[in-house]
Amino acid sequence: MNQYILDYNVIFSEEGSLLKWISKNKKPLALVIILIIFIAGILDIKYEGLFFQMLPESIQTYLADVFK
Image (cartoon, rainbow, N blue to C red; front, side, top):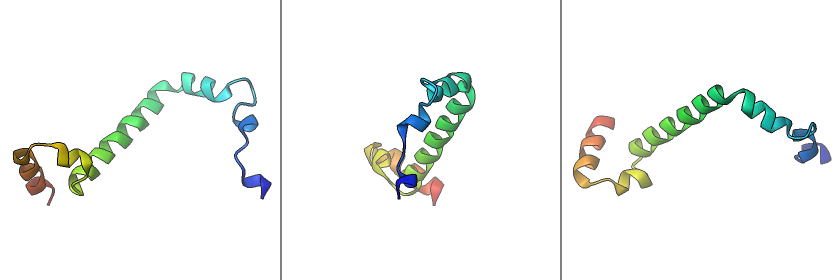
């Protein structure tokens, strides 16, 4: 059972190796984050989530017609 527990010593085994990896791979990481946010936005509009509900009704109607 102990093998499944997240061990922070493994992640930060070399004094911030995770931070070093992030600093070396900024562009791919930023691309992945932007892609995830874009997909989340499209799914929010498609399933009429919180962001969709905050939009004005005229835009909601237009987007509902586009995504249905």
